[in-house]
Image 1 (cartoon, rainbow, N blue to C red):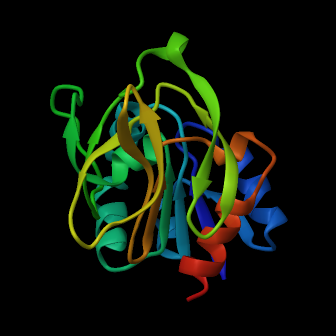
Image 2: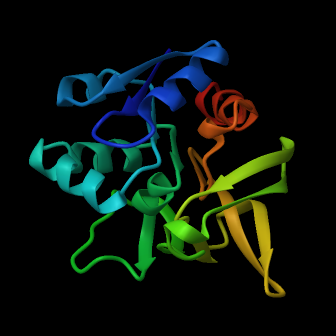
Amino acid sequence: MKLGVLALQGDVREHIAALNECGVDAIPVRTSGEIRGIDGLVLPGGESTTIAKLARSFDLFDLISDRIREGLPTYGSCAGMILLANELVDGAIGQQTFGGLDVKVRRNAFGRQVDSFETDLSFQGVGSVHAVFIRAPWVETTSPGVQILASVEIDGSSHPVAVRQNHILATSFHPELTGDNRVHRYFVTEILNK
């Protein structure tokens, strides 16, 4: 079983380290041959518009979209959640996503970089996790096939920040930055190895 972390921009090393701790052979991927040869994919946190543009520049965008649509187990954190969403709110003009996750995601929902924060939240199937939010998105709406795994309360409203739909997991926070690999382990055991 070989798991790839898309290595165009973002928290690549941190995801690889967390996945290796889970006993998975995780490697950086940035070519079409590497992406064709993996059994699962992680889309890291970073800048979603930059990752999408680089994927287009390196002729990877359609390949990644196709592999996700065909059932490739995929996990996206923060920018990765944005890239997996079928619809965006407040996206950059002309911003494209790989899609596959039947949700509408609001980019930079919690505010700018200065509004980044950390909190503890309850993650279904994992337990209490410490979550780091950096210019993070949240899920505005979900289809009936999407399972909400964790939410954050802001000003009396609940906003989903971790969701799953079949072979896709997405979080708006960065578990790769906390030293706690349980979200990665959830992806490996509940999605990748099923």
